[in-house]
Amino acid sequence: MAKLDVIIITGRTTDQGMAIDEKLSEEYMKSVAFCEMNEEDMKIIGVKDGDRIKVKTEFGEVVLFAKKSAVEDLEIPRGVVFIPMGPYANQVVGGRNGSGTPRFKGIKGVVEATQEEVRTIRELVVGK
Amino acid sequence: MRNAVCTFCGNVCDDIEFDGVTGKNLCPIGEAKFAAKRRIEAPMVRGRRVSYEEAIEKAAEVLVNAKRPLLYGWASTVNEAIRLGVILAEKLGGVYDQCSSVCHAPSTLAMIEEGIPGGTLGQAKNRADVVVFWGCNPVEAHPRHPSRYSVMTKGFLTKGRQHRHVIVVDVRKTATAYLATEFYQIKPGYDYAVFTALRSIINGHEKAVPEEVGGISKKKLKELADILINGKYGVIFYGLGLTHSRGQDRNVENIVKLVQTLNRHTRYILQPMRGHFNVVGAGEVAAWEAGYEYAIDFSRGYSRFLPSEFTAVEVLVRRDCDAALIVASDPAAHFPKEAVKRLAEIPVIQIDPHPNVTTLLADIVIPSALVGIEAEGTVYRMDGIPLRVKKLKDTGYWSDYEILKLMLDKVIQLKGE
Image 1: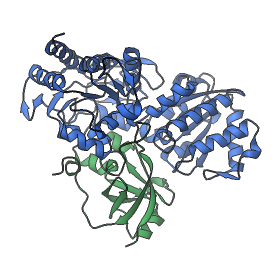
Image 2: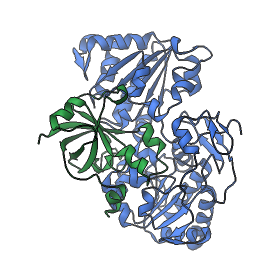
Image 3: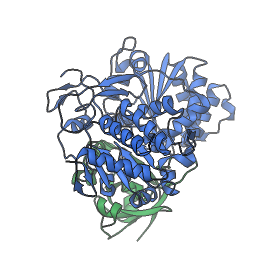
Image 4: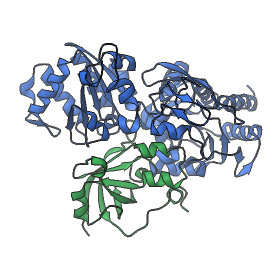
């Protein structure tokens, strides 16, 4: 299956903000466990909206649901993907940085289709 | 109650009408904030329910026995509680750090270098005829910002949307871009270069600018420079698009220089879009207590500031702390996984109203009252304006202030000072 080089941007969304005080809920997981992509990029790696993809960087990897960016008219350029801030995004963010603040945006990565499951937040953080 | 204050984002909207259950004038995020939801039910020590006093005493023991505890969070509580946190860090010889260090801390570094041509949101509302949103997305992160302060609002001198030129610059077409008069899409990581190009054009060195910078043509850059310079009073709001991507503090430094350049021709102010409702306080209070805003180490008995060594993420990744007190924050959700891994290895004490990802790792959990709903105090809005947040209903939960006050007393007692 084809792989695609991308630049990863992470950030806040309204849904993530609304569920932020209920992080152990299903709503929160839904609000952060996806990766928004340009439709043309999704065709290249052979996934449709809601399919699972694996995002890899030099810092780690994470399985997420692919989301088509045309939703509500918002557009993401080709070669760029967006993951809402949270435990999923942080699997692929590097820890150390000269400024003391991690670089949460503009991370080089690779995306591909996968059959692996999207892990729960508990699995990501506590490992069970 | 009229004029209640919302305690979610840096807007700190102070026009909320709260009837005891729901509030009027709230944005969707504020509504979620005020809605009833799952709470940490009781203080717990390793899963066992205990009294507040016992949990706080155990927490004080853990902190006193640690060589170098990390005290982190603070952006979602009141200044009075933050002050106790800074004093606690000093007494313990620990590290004080706050949410800014994964957020706007590069802005602090830039301001140490360059200063900030700052103003207030009131000036933006009443005066600004050019409004720029650079690398920020208030429609999603600060939903009422455009209607209260910056875009649609009717001000004293600038009377509504039709009198404002609204520019959005971002790497993707965000929801905020749809409010803009003009949207400029730049390549990720090219903000610094675009600021330099704009400064060159405004300074009359147009020839030095190549045909395209960061994905924007020279023609479009000249057009943008014209709009900026023709504003009578401009405000540039910027977000984590600058502090989280290549360049970080240097990006902010360069946008400050752009604003300085514009101020030779007209009047401009710069405002970072701060996230949590009191993240400004988490920095300001530490600055008036210890001289620095974040990444402060007290292990030598005096305060030292070194962001590349003493921010929470650095301290965790380098395994330089052996216990952590987390107040009103969720680092297990918002730190890179390498840092979270260390957090799982050390004793963690959490003070928070709601169970979150950090709760899964915490050894001692102390529930607190909701600031602005069940507990009062002072906070700083994103532009540094102090606001008194109110107590709107009674609760059996202790406030962050009460919890930290007793914890500090216990620590002083245990250390025999």
